Length: 327
Image (tube, helix red, strand yellow):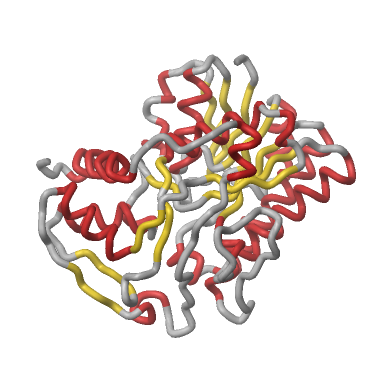
């Protein structure tokens, strides 16, 4: 592999792992990140490569984006406002960056003919009871009166934008809907449940569970997510299509809390909180979120390889090192 890849959001959790993988296979990487949630430390390993270039800046900067797109062969657009708490607190920023930034990026990609992978989210399925979620089904996120759904709306807009450019100009696009990706470099303050639980367990604090704890998710190791992304970028049959990317192993948040305590080796118990205490009175959660992976399997013969237990162990080891906690 010798292609030059632009990764927006490349100093973020998934983006930095993608940068590592691309560089390891001989490619060049340009990272564009405004560091609002990404961290330069995430690129510590990649920074040793002469083929890595980092630019701090916004995906809303049309001039910068066009210049960078012109210099590369293909694009992975991962730059976005992320994290439930941040989205609830900043719905306008979420829409501006996620939808508006995608339009800026896609306009440049279409004009210059650069194949583009667009990162979307399982959030676009909203609270739909139709499980497992299939790429072709109708989307069902909630009312625009609830700030929590601004993220889903922004990601759905980015998807529609990408596919519209594909139809209008023939731009090569691939859309991936990530389902609860986790792993090393995901910070507890990101709002993501697994690193938050692990950090509290390491600190000897009870794990916070919102609601009754029976809401369920399917967690996928970032290593597996990146594997799927790289394969999809190389697969011609993926052009113009949407793919769920994740694991099909479903676990309740209650079960996850038990597993975290087992793997960390500390019985710290749980603290139950109403959603309203941290997310506002109008917050709506999704009871179950399970992907159908048949389309992904058919396109790239992909199955997530990392068991949930190993994922928890990897998050624990990463946070132990960063917190200076014994393990």
